[in-house]
Image 1 (cartoon, rainbow, N blue to C red):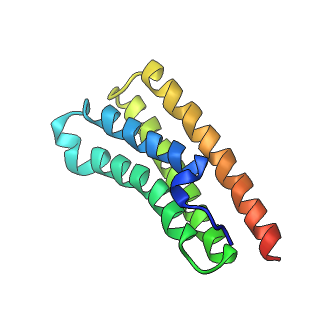
Image 2: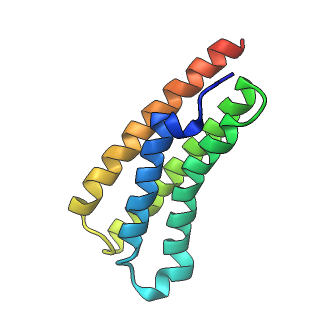
Length: 122
């Protein structure tokens, strides 16, 4: 089981950065999206580092791996919602380039980390 603080995990730090990006992007959305897409994007973005943190405090690598899988689900949910926002014209491709790159990086990190935990707990 992981002995270090989740705050020292690069994947958690990058996920926190992604959540900040999501908030900045959604600040520009139309007000009538506040309880729709804006809310969904923010919830998905917050869910990623939250699940990493919660999973790290569980009692086993198997449970931590399960929470990393949930974080990955939230990550693709966020990506889908941002693609929708882009298609609605709420944000430009240039604004999203860095965010999509960060999403890809976090996805790879979550996959790799989860694989390592699964191997260790076998």
